Image 1: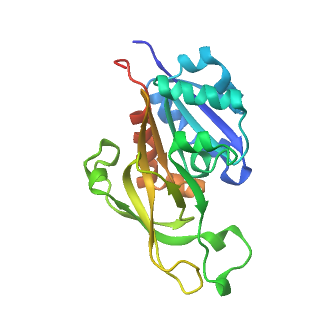
Image 2: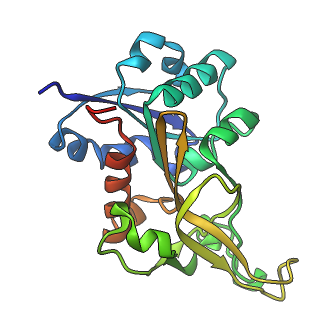
Length: 235
């Protein structure tokens, strides 16, 4: 049997620990029959030959930029059947200057609401809130979420701008707080899948730190999401 090929692209903002975070999942990919190539530049997306033999792209590139050639290559690869998967800012807060990337992925980080102003100390923990990831009815029936129940995290709670092409498997709700300017609870997707041409896209918004990525529910969802997104031999 020919091994599937996974391409891990990592870089961007160091705060999301792109090297250490993706390293957590490299053994899983290898154990599931993938030959893995790791790149620290998204320019690999412009290599049509490499993209056509790639079954799964795992991206962890927060913010940063992407060239027109690389973006065209990425979109084309997914449309032809290459899977795209990622978590947190590495996929949902990438390439803010590109609306075409946003359309491909189907969701863009907008903010992560912070604690009460009086409780903020000036560090990243100011943005760590306790929140629940709630499975949708669709999620409870989906292979990625089998056996996973609603779960609680203490980390950044992503507010995501999105569209109706996504199949949302889990959500999280931002409550109304007197120190915030919104006036009703806002529900954002926390886990979703998306069909793009012949390809599949998987996104999970939890994953700010290695601690979160090691959470049993988060890690299970990401591992299954990568397998789900990957092109299979029958495709």
